[in-house]
Length: 226
Image (cartoon, rainbow, N blue to C red; front, side, top):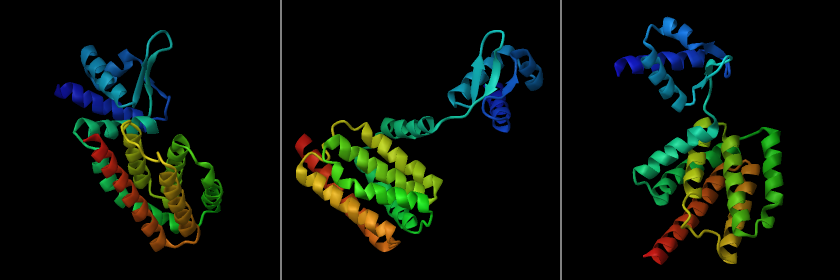
């Protein structure tokens, strides 16, 4: 198994050194280059393919080609890992609320006119989100925009993992009432205003209030389900 693991590592390195889609060689060429047997190379290729770093094509124009995982591949894996290890939406929320606070503060420091204009346009259409699906889309859009404005790729990733996990929790009953949606929209407006004004502390406060609102909804859903 060590030979397979070493061959997989070598294949992954070859892929990362090349541009996505670049031809890395045919099977016979890579057998010579890596100095492994055909079964070892094929097992290693399966491992690297599973990591979305390799594409193996058969036929006359086939061979081994460099590949890259897309955002969906990257995000689904940790969300699945969390679920398989017993994480609940409450567990995920307790962590992402802390990240969201920092994201909001960093977004308030953003000076790039393009995302600031995007946020202002988002604020102008907040009232249009008056159904459960529209509210979910609105919350997701705002979270992604603020994460992008934060300039922190790690924050973007963790926020996206949290929302991906949450979208699979079909038992949740968020934004069901007019009052719930009105509260959420009010906090969205105040958060947007704070970020647009460059007020990091108020932005953090609005995130805390939004997080407390969600915590209350989680408790309510739990009570209904018991």
